[in-house]
Amino acid sequence: MTVSFSEIPYDWRNPGVFIEARPVYDAIGLTEFPARAVLVVQKLASGSAVPGQLYTVTREADGAALFGRGSIGQEMVAAFKANNRTTDCRAIALEDL
Image (tube, rainbow, N blue to C red; front, side):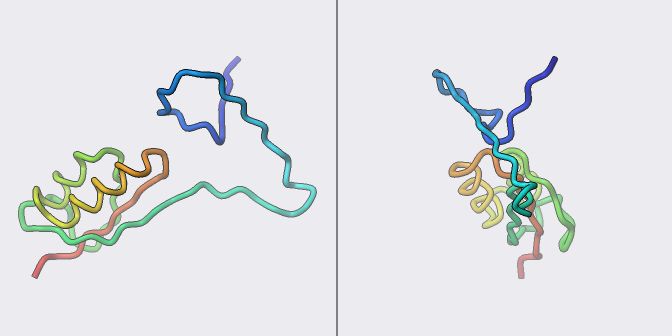
């Protein structure tokens, strides 16, 4: 038997007891949507991302690999991941002029 959680993030490493109560919203017409974020970032020529293509960013290191080390895209991914580790993050790269 597996137990899955909807609200308690999988990457919390805090000791303690966490309780999740999930109300059923079907009776009142509400639906649940997963939280997602899309970043529109600037990439340098050293980044491997194709401009205009959507990428899933799972780690802070993905910012440097996709958008180039020292780029605004890398900094945006680092800032997002430092503040929010659990939300699904996608990024679209724009070419640096």
